[in-house]
Length: 279
Image 1 (tube, rainbow, N blue to C red):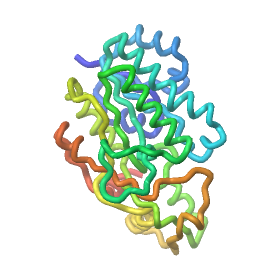
Image 2: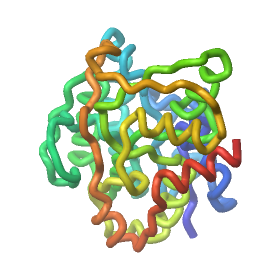
Image 3: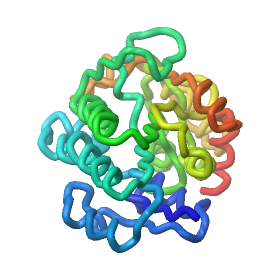
């Protein structure tokens, strides 16, 4: 009988997990469980004796991380390794959520789990360091890199586009960054399947929805499916400078996770339609 502990359980992915997880799951907010507080986490492990932990907690403010290096390092780089050490002590399987930002983004072709990681910003570097710390500390881990998460919960690109469209007649969106939007509810459902088969399937995996899109394509589909009439203009990354550099290309190869866990992954446009209907 598995007992699941979800850290970051009230963030975007955590709230999606709440809608699909079975009864014996404990969702902890950052206040309930500060991932950087080892003694608090140890107490929670003693209290709940989890067989599996999903770590959704992360520092995700990509641009702010360039200035708040210490905070990003503590949450994304140091804490996951300490969590893995704790999981080892309790023989708990750790499922950790990572990101496409571990890649530089200048490659072409689908990105596999074995491709070289060369993050360009603090967020990506700290997330990669967290991955490596987990791998060094505890063999019973599953690290899942995902991309462009959105849902009906929390703040995300889809909700931002719909909010901005209420007040504007025109929007400019970057068209030369390419990846795949991922509906967090689809990832949550996949995580439920992964937990059932996690024993012996340890390692790094990629998960996003199927298909390819630019941020412009994503925005266009949001407005088209939601029947929003707005003038949408494609622009280059150079026309929309940000403090942190984004990967220009980060389309993830999902072959490994589909084969190992027998997953069927929806196309991003189909999932976007579902999300917008729920919104």
